[in-house]
Length: 97
Image (cartoon, rainbow, N blue to C red; front, side):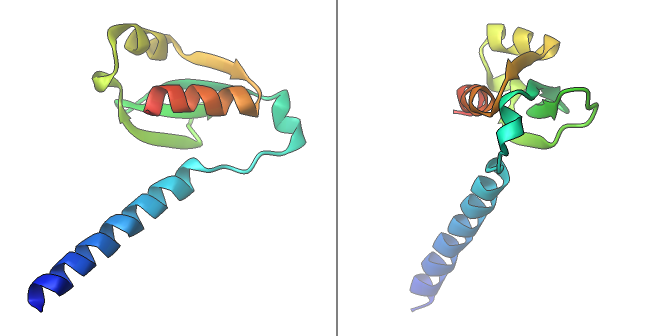
């Protein structure tokens, strides 16, 4: 019985953490975001997302830059700028999956 409770609470805990992670990754976009520019760059050792002209990221992923291939690490040191919400989402998926 104790083992069943432990497994149940462990699974619930994992589901909660995954839900929080997915909720942080989702961002609602407005029609004006199609023209907006976003930059993916290293921030504190992680892949982070910046809006154009901002010095602080609006989202920091849990993906460590050190775990990426060397070419990706070099690109993130300089910053990868994309135009529009769709390109931002695609680039974010490329670096975090």
